Amino acid sequence: MKLKTILTGAALAVGLAGAAFAGSHGKTKVGFVYVGPVGDGGWTFEHDQGRKAVEAAFGDKVETSYIENVPEGPDAERVMTQMALKGADLIFTTSFGYMDATINVAKKFPNVKFEHATGYKRADNVGTYSARFYEGRAVQGLIAGRMTKSNTIGYIASFPIPEVVRGINSAYLHAKKVNPDVDFKVVWVFTWFDPAKEADAAKVLIEQGADVILQHTDSTAPLAAAAEAGNVIGFGQASDMAEYADGPRVSSIIDNWAPYYVARTKAVMDGTWTSDDTWDGIGAGMVKIGKMTDKIPADVQAEALALEASIASGEYKPFTGPIKKQDGSDWLAEGETADDGTLAGMDFYVEGLTGDIPN
Image (tube, rainbow, N blue to C red; front, top):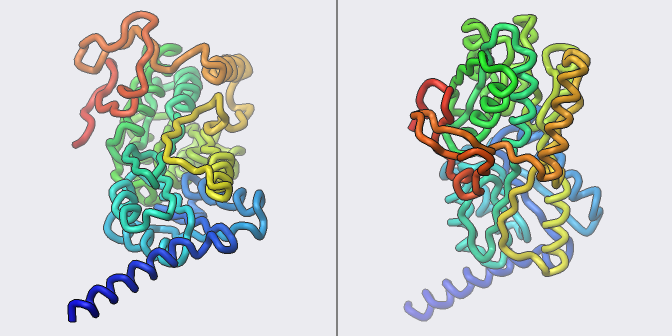
């Protein structure tokens, strides 16, 4: 019985290893795990554009697959496991809440490479990557501060993680720089993609006087609510959302994942892949500012483009002192810039923002 158990275990191990290496004998197999639908018009849409770029770059040398609408929980681990068993050589897990699931599955499949978006846990076969979205938020904040007539800007926030808090702080600081009278109202919806909740949040903010809506959620519903309200402007989030360019959308933040996905796939194909942490922004082209519409006055466009250029060149850092924390304590002195460690773990509002960050 003991011998049978050992043989069974060995057979299982061989089966798992064989599954993991299946792609290496032919096409390189690349899997993508998505938190929303590919048609969300935002976050997942742009990740899928990256997947398509991999196919375009390598043709019949690769085979890509994806699973959409995967909840951030135990089901994510099941989906990743199935991808690995089906022979994936490389798996991109594209939401913060997939972090622990990615680490857990990677331990079971040491010969499969994993890449986790926006997380911070790595292993020999797990790399991490994210974009400096807060750089784009700085540009949005400037535009919002210049264009608001009510001096009230609404912000739809997804989850209280550092990525989202950074974005709120960056947008607020740069709106405040150009408009000292500006006030931010933040609504937390605790979802990445839920058009109904996002629309409700936008309507609440508009009812509270916001004439500019920013969002860190994935659907176009806030822009639809802004269009319905009239005299309210907004921005594309994660993708260009250009279908609203003749309406409320005045610009956008575009997450450009394609070059990264192509490069990391090539590294797997070449055998040069190593676990790494990538955090790129406007300068590297991972964050792009979408075309500005004529609703933005020419002088404001010029000011926004100048800010974008100075961030891209590295001349200006969005978190440059003097900046105080919400409680009035000093954070950054005059001319001091925030280090990446502090930004990566940001769990506080800057001075001037009201309300609390939820637990």
